[in-house]
Image (cartoon, rainbow, N blue to C red; front, top):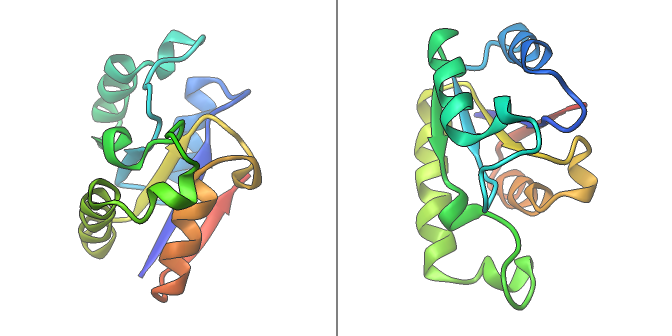
Length: 130
C-alpha cells in the first residue's frame, strides 16, 4: 500500500489538480481541522466541487485527524477519536490512490508528518509531494 501527502500552500488550484492527476490520485483526504483558506478555491465546498469535476473524490477527516489539538498532536494520536479517523484513512488507502492534504507545502512543518509516520510504521509507503 502507498499514500501521498500534499500541501496546497502557494499553489493555484489548477496546478494542484495537475499534480494530483500526474500522480494518479483518486481521493483527496483533507486533514485540516478548519477546511478554509485565504484562497477560496481551497475552501472545503469549492475544493470538493473542483475535485469532483476532475473525477476525484474528496473526503474530510479533519474532525478526527486535523491539527490544532490541545496537549499536542502526538498525545492526541492516543485518543479514540484519532484512531477512528485513522482506521477510515487506512480503509481508503487500501482501495484508492489517496493523498493526505493540508496547507503546509512541506510535511516537515505539518501535523501530517505524524500521520505519515504512523502509516510508515504499519508498512505503508508514504510519498510526500513537494
